[in-house]
Length: 135
Image (tube, helix red, strand yellow):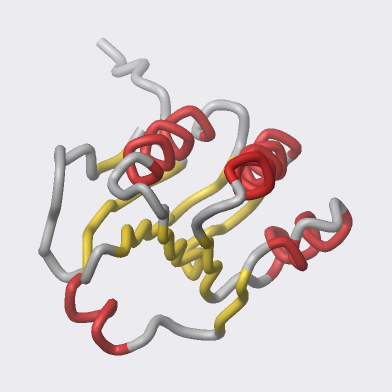
């Protein structure tokens, strides 16, 4: 008998560091996987009155329209709420091209790598509910 489980395309880890939510994304951002990302973003957004999110995109392998739409919604949250910040780390390849085409790159703070305290905290420190894992 064959196993017909779908191949999962995204892994998201959510950690906390000094009041900051850190999301590590690995895999493809597509219509199947984006609901997992948005669920993690919703949880992270609610951690503080002044949301402070760091999104490590170094593991993103692809991004379609659904992935771009998730970042557009996040950018709109920043505008609508007039509070909080979102930093994108290690945005490259297809994700960078897609966000640039959608004129979303300038809506976020951009960094080449995670700051050291965030790197350390991301190795197992969790805050809130643990929804880490894959699709």
